Image (cartoon, helix red, strand yellow):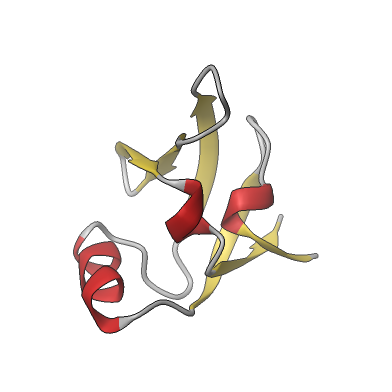
Length: 76
């Protein structure tokens, strides 16, 4: 099922489908391991639900909602 990374809830697992961000943010996200086809799991949420923390390639990384709204994923 297609959705955006920002729509994931704690415990959801997905595969990264597409990064639709500007070049500066895209480069940072790629450096963090958010590459098409990568497995990602939502593991923590902050008190105000922004940012959310994701398990990506063995590391837990917090991503702001502003940035995660542009990342397409397929739930698994």
